Amino acid sequence: MASDRSPIVVWFRRDLRLDDHPALRHAAESGRPIVPLVVLDARLASSPSIGARRRERYGAAVVALDRDLRRIGGRLIVRRGDPRAVVPAFVAEVGADALYATRDVTPYAVGRDEAIGSVTPIHLFNGGLIVEPETTGHVQVFTPFYRRWGAIAWGEPLRAPTRLHVPDGVVSEDLPPSPPMGGPEALVRLRTFARHGSARYESDRHRLDLDGTSGLSADLHFGTLSARRAVTKVESVAFARQLAWRDWAHHLAWYDRNASSIRADGTEPEVRWRTDGDGVDAWREGRTGYPTVDAAMRQLLATGTMHNRARMIVGSFLTKDLLVDWRVGEAHFLRHLVDADVANNRLGWRWVAGVGPDAAPFVRVLNPSLQGERFDPAGTWTRCWVPEVAHLSAATIHRPWLAASG
Ligand SMILES: Cc1cc2nc3c(=O)[nH]c(=O)nc-3n(C[C@H](O)[C@H](O)[C@H](O)COP(=O)(O)OP(=O)(O)OC[C@H]3O[C@@H](n4cnc5c(N)ncnc54)[C@H](O)[C@@H]3O)c2cc1C
Image (cartoon, rainbow, N blue to C red; front, side, top):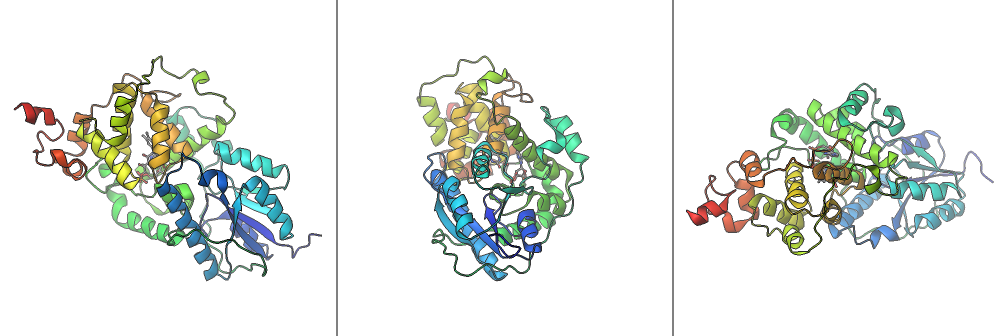
């Protein structure tokens, strides 16, 4: 029978940190034993839409979480399998009378948590977003959303607990075979950006050739960094605005969770998307002949990263020059980006393709040559990734056909 000494299971998902973690903090303050749990979800581990880089980064964050829990007297319990079966069985096994987790509003997580909640009550704490969907309501256009979002007080981030008591005898399976990289490393990156990058963020963030953005998207995706910690630490309105885009993307995912089809929402442009493969393969492999597009696509395959401006350029090229369905691009990004995020990626692709309530109009096409000239003016970034044009001057690198004909 449950007692006030029965343990609380804190189930970590996309919140792999100790800092500003309301569920963990609440459990720690109860004074009861805590069983920190991670379930390595078999469905996600074998999904073709999750690439090796994203899996490795997740593994590294799990290993780091165990390291960080041990520093405060705890440890992480790892189990493998379908959380729908594993979590209720685990709660019964350890004799817990409470299951805590951080709310995740994306569709797979919502379905999973509802299924588990029907068997074992699950207490979901905020902590993934800065502002929850219910606080702003369903706002379909970004600018009014941002106005509402900016008027909400989000509260001070919570400090990590300093001591945990994990009961003996709970068996853990092996950790993933990764070197640790998690919360403390993310906080170092955040501090470095706050100190050295934030003042130039507004002016440099679109430049492909500069290190002008925070590089924190994977930390925010896996929750090794709290978005509230990030917005509080960095003094930049432009940076806060991007975090508002992240919240908005997740709110839209939450409010669309029961929509059977995006085609049915009335925002799909009347385009007969091409289905033949040639252009798509050239796009995926960075062989289109447009250096800016090719540089971005090769960088993605080589590193799992891509600058936001480059995502817009290659997205526009795929959907508006090649006339290929935006879902093809969405799937390719999900597979290859380290920071691939169902909500942010969907919003980005819909925006670029002119789909959705507040998207760029379909007729707004980004010219890759002009974009290259504007955001990589000397061609330094393009030269790194497209060696066949590296010998060209800044004047022709973004239009190599002029050099060839001249
Ligand atoms: C077609 C397309 C696909 C995208 N796919 C993803 C994706 O899978 N995962 C992802 O995290 N972002 C995605 N984005 C948004 C954006 O490109 C990345 O968040 C950003 O490039 C990450 O780099 P950063 O951390 O240095 O960003 P910064 O400029 O430093 O921004 C700080 C944080 O704000 C959030 N953010 C910034 N821009 C956006 C945006 N437009 N929408 C939502 N959140 C934003 C991210 O969490 C980011 O880490 C996509 C954008 C487009 C146009």
